[in-house]
Length: 227
Ligand SMILES: O=C(O)CCC(=O)C(=O)O
Ligand SMILES: [Fe+2]
Image (cartoon, rainbow, N blue to C red; front, side, top):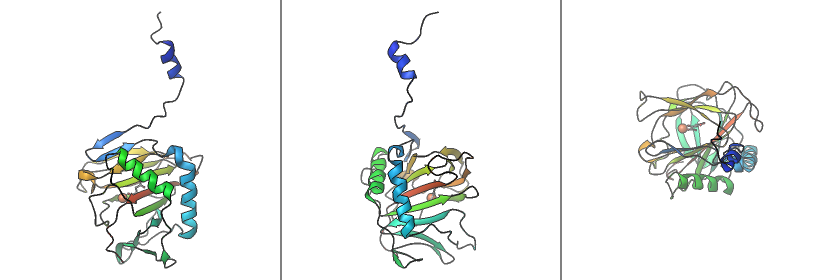
């Protein structure tokens, strides 16, 4: 029996491969596994500081429901849902104060991820933060309240794994479901910018840093025409 591997290859087999991967889901949509992982501790710290100023809350929907994910925002503009509809606002309606500023570690990571995905000019001015528990989900939807669809969406997952639904340009388009793990970043723009997507639920296993909670941050560029 000969040995099929050189000594160097054998050594490599003993080490985990921690290089970020880059997977094009389709034109304009790029999944970069683990892209945020090296920065996770600082990102979670910033998230908790944001939530101290602008707490996670379950927003009401125009259809009369309540969102099962709790949400807040940072940046110049924040996303709100209410019985009156969806909007980006400059103030948190809970405090009537401006949304917390977007911390530099968040915006830098989002811009680096966008650049790696092929969007070098991304300039986020809004970041929506989602907090999911075991019973949370987010139905298939488009991100279309931004006014500007020339810039991509950059989505960072932290903590417990989410089961992400990735569809197409129409609600009835075929949907792929896959896991988004701690540190994964998904970027969608260009021809995929208005593709339907959502969260089917969470994987059962707790995460060492967040327990049974999954956090997600989506970075957006919103045209400043809102209230
Ligand atoms: O939690 C996610 O991965 C997706 C969140 C999302 O689609 C949104 O906030 O618009
Ligand atoms: Fe979305």
